[in-house]
Amino acid sequence: MAKYIIKNNLPTESDHTPDVWNTEDEAMIAFGNTVGILRAKYPTKVVFRNNPLRGTIQVEIDGFYYYVELYREG
Image 1 (cartoon, rainbow, N blue to C red):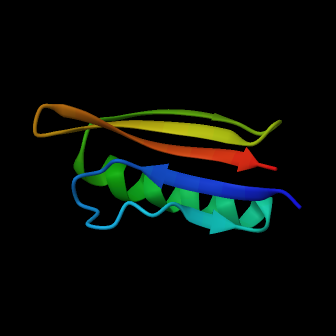
Image 2: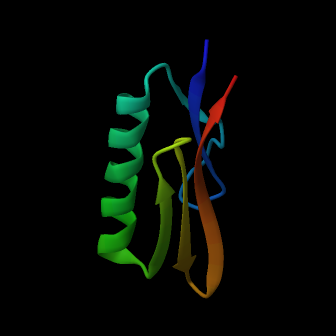
């Protein structure tokens, strides 16, 4: 069974354990929420595609670039 993973290297996260969802819809909603939160505070660049579901957010925080990735595993 496929799982959808969102992982990041953001400095605001104390625990870098990836988030895992069982459905594509849940993963898309969570990724979209993350985009909204980051875009409201920091300069961001977002790349997203539906087939296969995959996304990347590049965010600049205090002059450093960090990433959030959405991808399918399995």
